[in-house]
Length: 69
Image (cartoon, rainbow, N blue to C red):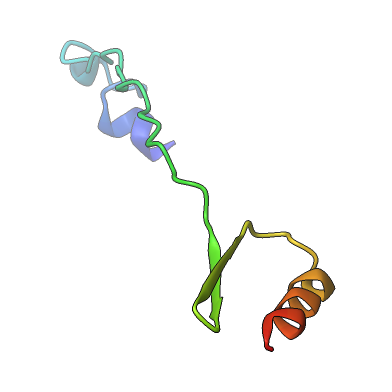
């Protein structure tokens, strides 16, 4: 394999004297960023309604129709 030869691990004896050493890799701890919950807003006739994603669409439509005096 090419990388064995390139790093001095191949069959050549003069390359073996200059063997490359592998060092451990240390990765930083992953950071978790807080995510605010998404809110959907609907305003009608001065009334502001807030819904979380996944709220039943038919429910939102029924509320909006009922508030549209």
